[in-house]
Length: 77
Image: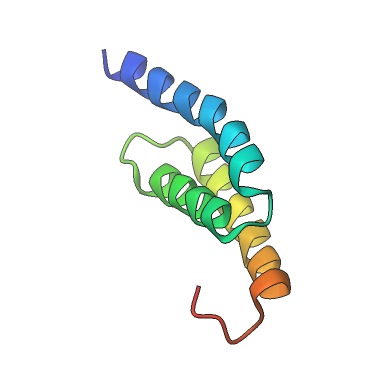
């Protein structure tokens, strides 16, 4: 049952991330926050696999570069 819950949760993220990107824009602050939350959840889940953690690290590294470029180095993001 836990695996089914993880599959549904992961499936929802895959479904809603593209919709959020279209709604907020790929470099919109709201979409960046949604991606940060997704990466944080992936990395903090006790049931996360190594691949999940690697994905989270990749997302966070990409977000760091994007926020630095878009929002500037003095933004508290």
